[in-house]
Length: 510
Image 1 (cartoon, rainbow, N blue to C red):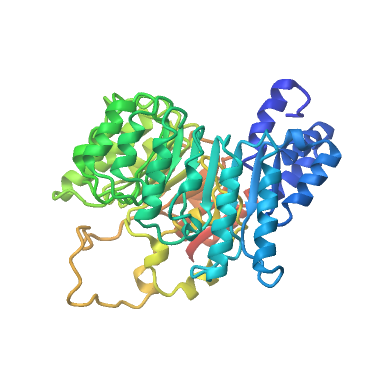
Image 2 (cartoon, helix red, strand yellow; image 1 turned 90 degrees about the vertical axis):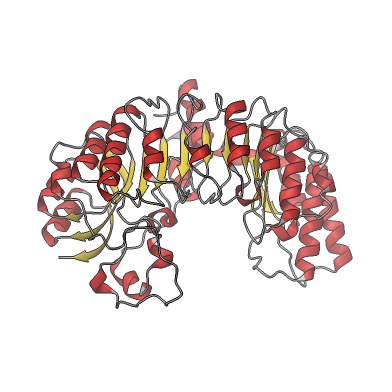
């Protein structure tokens, strides 16, 4: 795509905003059309510290580019010792006044570089004042991103949020400890923007009140309620009211949800759903069978993440359910791009083969038999770091190349003989997982029927990769990251010769 045609230029303009800075710099060198498009896109986003904002606006005005500005990315971190308190506040207010005279800005992203978890009183005071001034100066905002801003910088009164009535996208605070103050502020913000709101990324601050308010939002499509305390009743109310238009539903770590609400997340109620995340939702695997079976066809589902947090009481039935789930996913989710399954003890080579042989658009595949997070729960991390090849961290976004944090979160646990066994304390509660089951892994038979997708950004299977596996994987046209339990030296050399830039994160080399 050379970027010369109008259609190509329109596509490139949308894609550039999702790329990291290193990739954008590389795109500038392709040809003149790409250089022009990258320059225009960079001009549209003013990225600077709030104290340098007046100079940046003056530079834009001098170059005649101020009318092209559409987004504002501001660092509100406190610069200690640079100015007196009165002079600092005056500079911040002057910057906010200049921003209010730029009519084209519709997106505001606020972050605080280097602000630690226990900010000082000066940092909190200056940050709260800066955020308050910016929000008051931009009542025409359509996108508000506070995800990189500590929740301590939220004005307890929330008065600055009252003027925002045209928001379409909200990304709420994720840094620091969210409390009822931030949750109440988010509820008020959602209530004042129900007629225009399309997406809310509130995570732990999403409450039942917010879901009830979103039922009255005619354009609402995307919800991220990860780690929230929402209940079955509120989720069912939202699905019944707006399920026909929802495209993204992230419910990971919502521990209060049960089968009563999860069982209704079917294509009948969510016909346009593209993203579904049910990681760490405490339901049995037969609940997932109600969502993914031969009768449930998901025409638009592109990203799916499941974890069987509680196994079925019958191991034999549990095994049958898990393989049935993968067969149904392979047949009824034709557009699936990313699939991540954890804690699926019953999946066999036949189930994995159904996924690899049917999904031609698949780019990220993670299928692990264990259910726990291997990074936070594994001991002996120093030994692990010596055997894992680190990868540079790109700007990980949905359906893009995986970030290093996503890769680490999918690496399998160490073998039992690699870490000294430590018995749990006597008072530790028993886990619902079948820990007494022998550790199983996939074999090369899962690849014998072929792999329909030819490109993988991330492939993480609970498998011991041998020469047969390597021969099948070598037929791929692209493989960026490969994770697993064990890999033989011959298989490793074969894959390295075929994919020299592939990052291999495998615990043992046999």
